Length: 149
Image (cartoon, rainbow, N blue to C red; front, side, top):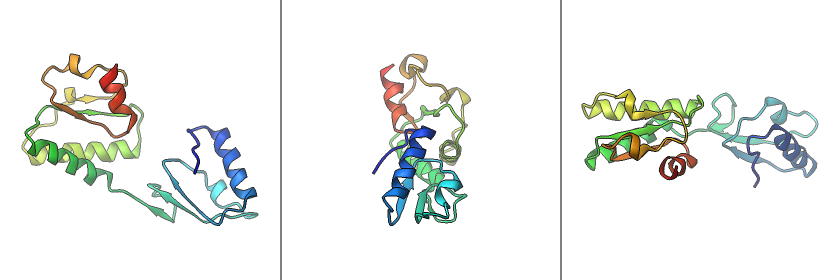
């Protein structure tokens, strides 16, 4: 188990280490990988990627349906002022989860309010939206930054 921390140099170093150790295979999640690393002819390592639709051997999570179900649960609990906290940088995951957020609101007869969508980090949600009852975030670190800053 290892992490690239979105560092290309670290990624290259780790992959070289994997090749040198002749791993039998790997499951890679939460990372963008270059085809170069996965298809090296000299030491090919079988790999399954998580949420990488462009790679032929990938398993995926239905991000849109997951967000929609989470929102439906919150709406059924009575929440109506639900802020969507975006990760701030465009990503496929964020777009799919935002789609699920919007779908659930529409299914409950609620118009999507762009004032309830935050796309930058470090926003104090409670102060900026006093009617807020909860928020939904596409990424694990976001709830912490949204609630503590």
